[in-house]
Amino acid sequence: MKTISNVDFENKRALIRVDFNVPLNADNKITDNTRIKAAVPTIELILEKGGSVILMSHLGRPKGGYEEKFSLKHVISELEQLIGRKVKFLGDCIGEEAFNYTKDLKKGEVVMLENLRFYGEEKSGDSEFAKKLSKHGDIYINDAFGTAHRAHASTAIIAENFPNDKYFGLLLEKEIKNIDVLLHDPKPPTTAIIGGAKVSSKITIIEKLMDSVDQIIIGGGMAYTFVKAQGGQVGDSLVEDDYIDTAKKVLEMAKEKGVQIHLPSDTIIADKFANDANAKSCDISKIPDGWMGLDIGTDAIQQFNTVIQSSQTILWNGPMGVFEMENFMNGTVAIANSLVNATSNGAFTLIGGGDSVAAINMLNLADKVSYVSTGGGAMLEYLEGKELPGIKSITN
Ligand SMILES: Nc1ncnc2c1ncn2[C@@H]1O[C@H](COP(=O)(O)OP(=O)(O)O)[C@@H](O)[C@H]1O
Ligand SMILES: O=C(OP(=O)(O)O)[C@H](O)COP(=O)(O)O
Image (tube, rainbow, N blue to C red):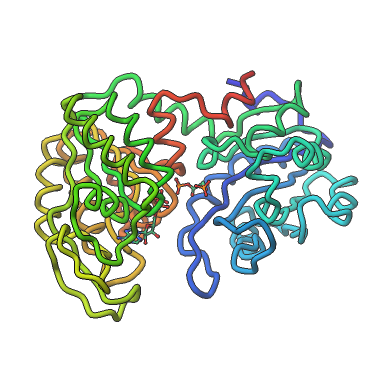
């Protein structure tokens, strides 16, 4: 492990890829600061060692140009509070002004670049873009565990510009150490609970997870693509039609491999995507047109609770419903409590993902489960046994 603990940072500029992809409310206020807090030890260590810090991150999924709601200016005051010093926000990540500023950065200074994904080159892993970014620092550090599964310019490609000066940050080190416990020594029966909204990213992960877990619970916005694949009617619920065939394949493979897949039997449907929508419970395969499933139903909660209580190792990524809206948070609250209960009965419980962590924090339950990871997709892919691009680029 290439750790920063023994590195000399005196008068050096440390360019750190962090994952500040934090949830924001409609007023662009941070609703959960876990990912920012998690990056603080690395920042502080470098400053203590006489270095300066240039932070770079993405926020959300912008289309490739500037979008106000995805500006990293929204995280600055929270970051300043957490590290107890001023942070200079640069309105671009590769503009001339930004380079002029970071060129002569003094020890103790902290700079935050604008959202890397305002450039399409970030996600395409463009090496010219990565090279430009690399000019900001003398040493490159990857502390963005939540984005370590992406082979993007700032998370992986950039490392080739720092052949002898690339390191893991303290968060990345800690995450790997903790998740390795589950990877190498899981106590059966093992259950993965997958929810949330990123159907296309997560469906292939579910496919792979079948090799390492006994049971998979699929809830939240993930469920409807599977229900539709089984021939059910899902109305206007979140579905990625391009992944129906993959969902069918996953269900067939599960049978062959003897992995039990649990889909919610019922769901809470709404007539619009809003907290004040008309809502009622419904069989998940009989959702009328004009209605959408926004939470799991009470039968599904019981069904999932039974599975959870009979498991010894439980992994949870992705909320069971639109928990940000009070009327659709029941399923997520119930599953969180179910995990707490399982933990107190001796199960090892691991929760990861930006929104899943926000949910567990909202309920003040983070210290009642075994481990909370800042990564969702990254954690799942790591557990699949995949070599993550963000890790590989440092160890290579
Ligand atoms: N039934 C649903 N329909 C639409 N969105 C949903 C549904 N259930 C959960 N979600 C949304 O999924 C989002 C979290 O998804 P995701 O990013 O995949 O999770 P995580 O960040 O924990 O990995 C939340 O904002 C939540 O509102
Ligand atoms: O929020 C994130 O992942 P997660 O939803 O799996 O926790 C990371 O910041 C990665 O974001 P991305 O899935 O848009 O690449």
